[in-house]
Image 1: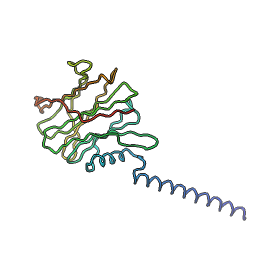
Image 2: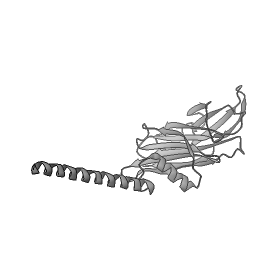
Image 3: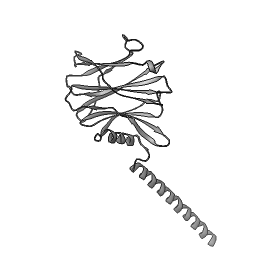
Image 4: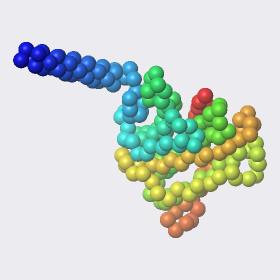
Length: 220
């Protein structure tokens, strides 16, 4: 009988120790999330980038994962009433998810359309990303045509095009983003030009313009 009680006490003791370890682990995880010591979730990286950029909290509209370019990178398109932001983030074992860079566009409605170009290169790959993103405030603009040209290859030829006919709506904005996946033989020779054309619902052309550069990132 005493042996049976001893076994029960041992089992209870083991259970209590396991519960204490689990509670301690959960408390540690909660503390690390609360203090941003480790990026368990991509949204933590977005919040960190908002603080860095000095913008109010944004609403996530789109998340892109491009494993063919890099397996540990995400791109978040988000906005609030005043800005549109495209955040690139990466994951590593030591720090979890962390922000790399985020170009921010002012979208207060004072301009009919605001577009930016953000380029990301990788030192160990022969591909790079040209992200074209922005917001449309003019109700007459129904679609956009985006074109990317690598001037180092062919100054007169277009490398890739995209027709934007659907927008993400939030905070009173019509927002869009498109990643152009391009390749190069020598990154030092790369010279990119991005052009945008705006169109009405009936297909009539409104105007065209060169998209300004909003930043670039090189990830090793």
